[in-house]
Length: 355
Image 1 (cartoon, rainbow, N blue to C red):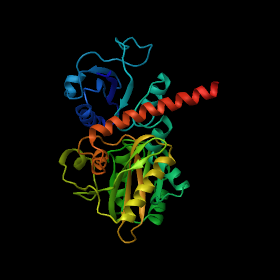
Image 2: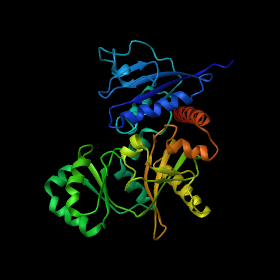
Image 3: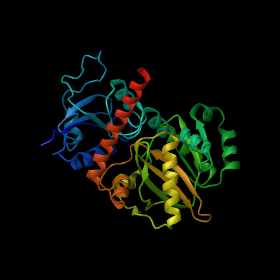
Image 4: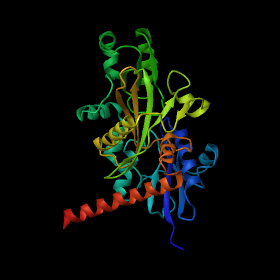
């Protein structure tokens, strides 16, 4: 029998998406073939302290009990045991995990890990920066403004006038660096803008104000390193006006088209744009790219890219790959393989530079 690959699964974290991370980690843990992989589970609590736990299947209360530690080597509560591992699998959604921070720690340790690099993770986390890059690459994005908290405090009236003049209603207002529809509001008139901004500023100091697109919400999964491939696209059919946090993770009344009912040319275009978006930010491993398909014009707009998408068994990323012929357990194995591949190529590059 071949030796098991040793994986450290990192989940939880300090962001507002803490609970979603636990759901994703639970699904990953259940679907990792225990005959092939030995899994060590590390829970990161909302204060940023780490703890080795039996598995993510435990309740939050169970995981929170007992002693946790800091990864900082000079902290007195440092890790009490060595981590015997081959590769790390971060499934930390949002800031302090999906934004390049945990990736930077793993890069400093020079260990292989699943997913995107520090730079790609940081870019994708910041929706405002992502849109700037996509626009520079001539990829289609909706009209939008970026508002910083200190600017809004000083220039409220001027900004309201600019929004009213240049962006038609409805608008979407959301934090630039958060996911899972947290802090997002749909706005249909000027009087609603200040309250929507106040809600978004609870989570971030940089806010996106975007033109709302009347049409369909589509998503596409991307997998790979230097030669990424795209899944069949899927469609989100929201129960309410948009696919919000409550419906994503609590009510579950939104319907999904997996795969989406699209023409072959539309499928090909979405797959092409997904790969181009993935490559525009130098992504690797995995990502989910979200789109709008405008009803009247049938124009396709790139909305955002997520480098650690939701990974529950009903999440779009694995479901779209399942519809494309790649099921959940082999999908995880492919992601782990891509993590090793990226580390090996980095090592070869270093050897070439120093030879």
